[in-house]
Amino acid sequence: MCTWISEKTAVTAHGKGTDEWINLTTANVYYDHPASAPLDHALIIDFLDEAKGPNARVAVELSADSARALIRAIEATLAAGELHCHDQAPLQTAQAVALSG
Image (tube, rainbow, N blue to C red):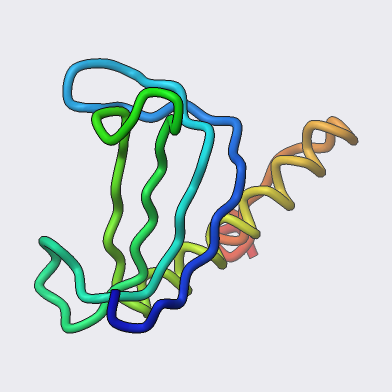
């Protein structure tokens, strides 16, 4: 690792592996030289099932700008989804509001 900057968190998730959907229990997030993406550095997220080892893994390499955009999209989607599901209000995304207004 180039920076040794990493975070580990438990997750409750499933991910599509090469053959099938797999249980995911952990996300390792780090900033380093990517293995595949044509970037000097990337935010890398390894989702894995620690009990099954390295074959039960889904990896993502993102540019810093892409990672920040993804964070914003996740936050906006969670906020809208939770509001809709808890209040049963009509669901409107920011894009739909902009188009209608």
